[in-house]
Amino acid sequence: SRGQVFNYGQGLPGRAWELGHPVLMKSDDTYFRRGDAAKRAGITTGIALPVFAGDYLTGVAVFLCGDDAQSVGAIEIWHCDTARSHDLVMRDGYFGSLDHFASLARYTSFRPGTGLPGEVWQSGMPIVMNDLGRSHRFIRFQGAQKAGITTGLGLPVFHDPMQVFVMTFLSAKGTPIARQIEVWTPDTEGGLRFHSGYSGSGKDLAAAYATTYIAPKQGTLGRVLLTGVPTIGDDLPRGAIGGGPSDLTKLVAIPVLEHGRCKAIVALYS
Image 1 (cartoon, rainbow, N blue to C red):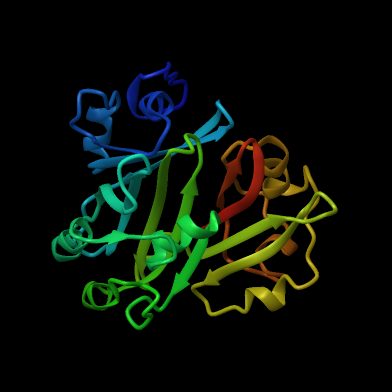
Image 2: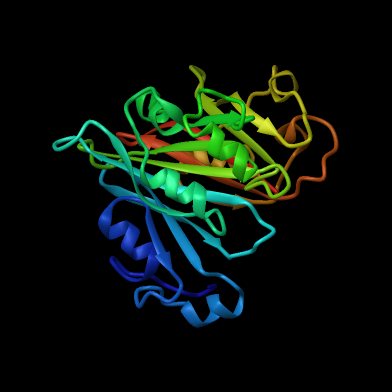
């Protein structure tokens, strides 16, 4: 992948840029330029999340998935064309071996405020949900319980105001999509304050970050606040991982931009 360049409409990242919304692509798709290498690595599916500041693309985050019977999780793309419908329906998704849960998703729709996708749509903010198998906020809680899915993250995708897109990341406790999930929001001083999150280790993130302030340019999250570009980082100061020592080593930071302004930054730690 290093040294690869994707022009407008070219490959998975270029296709997401051209279409202006998240895109799922199988590794054997003719658009997927790295298909042979992906197959050798056991990668079967890629999902691209473009980030726009108004009409201008700042970057594309690509999630690559492999079919593994031991790994439980899903990534979903929900869409509503507001000129034709009032419901979010599943446009595409990766479910691995979760065939029953995939079938549930295809026959489920959401209005603003209902379920994880609907709450993200209504609030326009990233939302983290835990204990999905017992939470009635998660409309498919019985399916989640059966599949072993415990944690969900929903992200709004802003570009065309007439086209609503929401991405949801669903994972099991044993194979989490991230070991720690954090949502940070800008404050009146121009920096970032902790908003919400989830720690697989049970850490109380709200207490750990009660006095934490991240300034523009400070660490990976501060740079993402300044640039609006999704970034992978390994410069994790003590204050950036809930205070105190931790075995977390890397993070993916994804900005949520609306009308060119940062509403939130989502940090996924591994």
